[in-house]
Amino acid sequence: MSTRTLVLIVVGALSLMTMLLQLPWIVTLLALVIVLGVLGYLVWQLWAQACDTEELNRLRAGYEQLDQQAKLIIRTDLELHRTQEELDRKLASLFALHELGQQLRISLHPDEIYGKLNAQLITSFGFSKGLVGFCPAAEQLTWRSRIGVPEDVAEQIRQHLLSSGQLQELLAKPAPRLLKADAETNPSMERVRQLLATNALVIAGVVPNSGPTGCLLLGREEHVSSDWRGDEELVAILTTQLATAVENSMLYEEVWLSRQELERRIQERTRELAQINSQLLRLNKAKSDFVSAVSHELRTPLAAIKGYAALLRGGQFGPVAVAQTERLAKIEKHTDLLAQLIDNLLDIARIESGRVTMESRSIPVHELFETVSEMVKPQLDAKRLHLKTRTDGVTELVGDPTHLPRVFMNLLSNAIKYTPEGGSITVSLHRDGSQILVTIQDTGCGLAPQELPKLFQEFYRAGTPVNEQVRGTGLGLALVKRIVEAHHGRIWVESEPGKGSTFSFSLPSAPGSQAT
Image: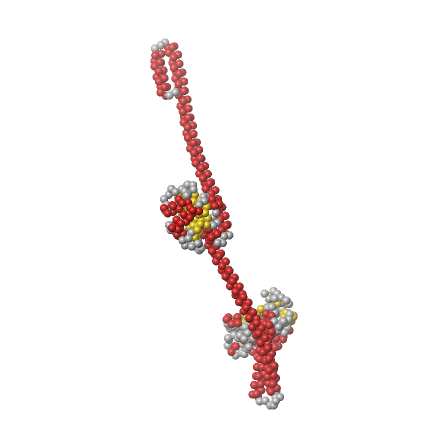
């Protein structure tokens, strides 16, 4: 019931009441009760109708709100679905990139690398068509992979890229570019998209720092949304992977070729060294044989010279003047020096030729020191030198009883020779693991650093002022080195000008052990 109707009824009721007032009061009262009842009912109906309208409006507003929420949920669900699809596609692309990386890791040639993009990988990247180009030289292009593209179409695209100069431009600017059907692009590049028959095309160059270049053309037949940067990023990763793989393959090839060349040179040099070593062995044997033969030939006349000189000096052939006696004494002295030189040469030649075998016996240290000290005592006394010995609990040495004392003798004689009067010489022994370390230290003039590597060479004498006054053959230290090495030891020297020298050598502490 509308408000207008209700007003008309009220007006009618009032008119009726006016008419009833003219009737008797009982009738009027009854009529008023009826009219008021009717009016109350009508007012109640009007209030109920108003309440229903308000509830209806509230329900309608609630429905409209639910409708909006439902539409929002549907849109969100669609967006989530699209996002999920995009994530799935990216996940598949990343997995494909990983798989491609594994394949490229074992590829060792650029031509093989450019052929690794197959149909399965292209599909995993979300593309339906693709061309992978290989540029072995400038203005050359061959397709190494062709996915979903007929051979004649691929050839047309190749000819177009070469003739239009787009290939050179692409290699000069290798960053991925997206071509869409509904966007304005370079007409020349748009022609490539049309030939490929795709709605969207991503084209990029593969430009490694070294090695042959290439290019990628990957297309989609479906329409591309506004958010297409993922395609560019994916292709950028692809081109980076391919470029890195090409560079690695070139480096591997370079290293392999270098290794082959190095092995060839090593083999060649090994053959040369083997030939040279064989010649040196023959020459060394010839030298040893010559020295041995000459030394033997010299010993007999030398002994005769010394013998006759001694007879003459002793007056066996008549009286001899004092001046003649002095000259004969010098002849005997120089004869002894020459005999020592010959002995040293013979010993070196024998050791080098392997004709001398060093015995391995236990030699008491005190007996060795007594023997050597007695032999050098005249030289020590002549220069008033002090000889000190330190054994540190070492009671015996293992070596040849004939040749090992010569090592001590030569090293002590050398120290005495270069130590000024009043100086000191210290001989020390101590155990160092399985070795016995022997040091002979003097307070002499010392040697320059450049002299040290040459000291143990045959006939070498250091260029010191002392050597200008002291005679020597330059064979003593060479012989010492040969004897020590024949005992499976090693010898070295430390020296400083003005502070003296220290000769050190090691010997095995037990028979059969070797120095390390």
